[in-house]
Length: 87
Image: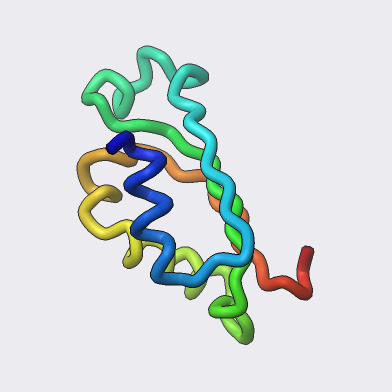
């Protein structure tokens, strides 16, 4: 299973209505995280679970769902986290 598939599986706990993950690691070639094998990703997620939560709480929910991936497989994560009403 590749990293994006693994991320999709883990983020499934947030019941996303929409989920897009793009590997942008090629844009960061030579960067410290890239040299260590961790990736740079763009994440756009829409879920009702973000209702009533601010940006920091939403990001924490995402980091929690991704768990260990955040410490060893993901170096950078560009997040766009929305509720259905915001898109």
